[in-house]
Amino acid sequence: MKNLNANEKDKTITVNGFFGEKEVTMDEFVEQWLQTGGVNQLWKISTSAEDMKQIEQIKKWVSEMARKSFLE
Image 1 (tube, helix red, strand yellow):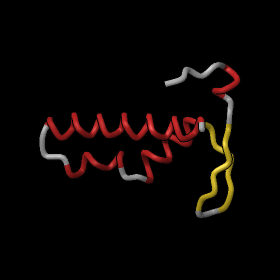
Image 2 (cartoon, helix red, strand yellow):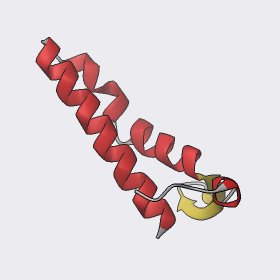
Image 3 (cartoon, one colour):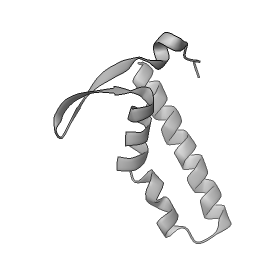
């Protein structure tokens, strides 16, 4: 994955959501995917330590995909 320089860290994109267009940073974009995608709620259905490891991997994948999407 590409490392962001100082200017890129301040970059925003426009997203069109339920309440219209909004400017978001990469961190906000990633967090929105983790929250609205339900990823941060998966612990509620986990039943083992193995489940928790898989949830952490899912969070990592979603974060990576969101970052790539933000940069496109």
